[in-house]
Length: 576
Image 1 (cartoon, rainbow, N blue to C red):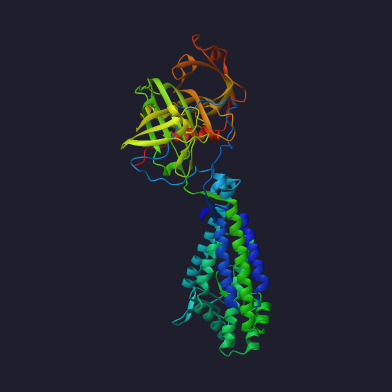
Image 2: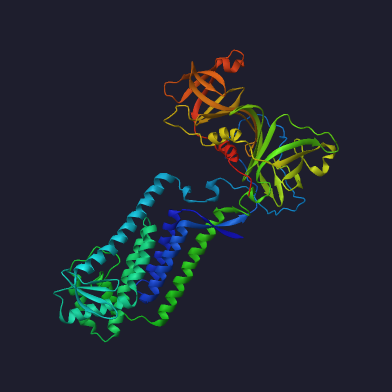
């Protein structure tokens, strides 16, 4: 199956434009009727525009990996108690074959996929704005000229104005003639411009210029635009001669007007529009209907092959999950653990702490905490990437789980510690019970702040900091808006799996008050490096661990992708 996704691909559009222009130039230009050429140009510009912004993609059911992430090389951790669940039982849930959404660069979801998005997109947007402003300026100029010029005559088809311009031209349903233009030449010009109006050439040029505005970077769209104007002139020349006008005298009048200065307007039609040589040669050329049909067929077949090949290559280079995300699975949202027990046992272990599970688009994060005072609390956490295989939800190592609804907002899930086949697990199956929940705002606030942590001029500590001084594990300190989250992250040793656990602390951040820094209710001394891109934290309380008494060094980093994904899961809410 095939779908279409948004993707800004200017280089592909330029290549497609070059191939289509080559087909036009060698098969159709001045070799077939002007009507055929204009239609080919219109279709070609639309095709180039489509390839600029969209591309086809294959619908696949694939198992993603976390190869793009760089978790710690620590040994694999045990399967967390908050295991993911799958294989829906009652009530029957609508399930679809799905895979988690790969990173943006893989699925090509938006304009933000340009290699240098901000700079390139800013330049592109500026070009579009300038082109549109130029287009509007032409329309305003036409309206201004009509108000200032003298009407020479008015017909059902057009209004004719006498002007002091050097060259005659038409704009919309207005014809502007030099006041010195008289006699036979004036008659030829009026006849010529009325033909432009009958064919609605002005409207077609306006539409083409709007397409040109969004393709301003593509030189071949500019060439197509100029060719469209030439083909319109060729069409009108043929119409004028079909009215019985003398060929030689008409061609001589073209030469007389061509030496005059042309105007700056792109959407005007002009009697003396260049290139005159091609127009005169085309008027004197005889083209058979058979030749037109053969060339049109050759151009159409070749263009179809080029477009189909480009679409096929684009399709092969892009993949689209059969269903975008695990959000289509009915466990998306926030859950609170009710109990955990082994199968075949009546013993129920109610945790002495609050434990939540955030099931996001393609992963879950399950933090738990016992002591809390406002925003200050310690927590443990675990989680892993999620994926779908058929109608079964899989965890990070590909271990299937089974879940069933025992109430409208309550589920039980079965899993095997360390992973394994549920059917062969015997008495080693574990069961969790979860209910829909909305965590307290004070609990969520530090995680929400951490998900947006970035450098700030207001506070030198705002942002994301990394340390490896906490027992060899990766430590991430995220501070934003006076709140902080410190995570000690144990990642999978398998680079193809995003599977993690760890511990952490949340809390308020305070400055001054007799200490350099207070975080989570604990006093710290902070020693900044000269470049302000690293610092050392030393705990002031001797009752704290030796690691913190010796000092823990942090260096500023950009938010790692895998930590950002974990933090984002805390932003989800239960579906309506």
